[in-house]
Image (spheres, rainbow, N blue to C red):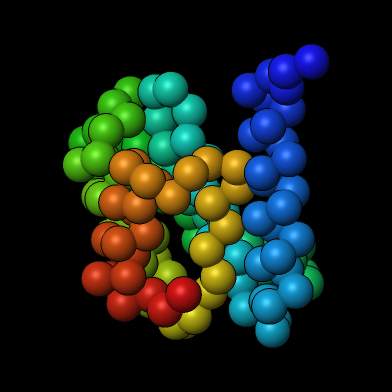
Length: 119
């Protein structure tokens, strides 16, 4: 019997997250969520259970409300890099969840790297 898309997504997410947590070394987790209409990213301190910084296309200041394309993803990536620097974060690890590292997710990661985040 074939697996559903959702089941495959959940398996991919857990596989990715478990591999990354083994190499965390106390760094913050940069978690990405992509929906059909928006993309968001958070810098999460898993030890304290606190979100340090966040950025999303839902913010009117970024000018991409309701848009989920590569340009919007790149803008969100630069925004999270700025906010991470303000919070004093230079290193994190990239948690793409179950999303493939391609297209919008890759554009976000590349923009965050160009903004100064190391992962």
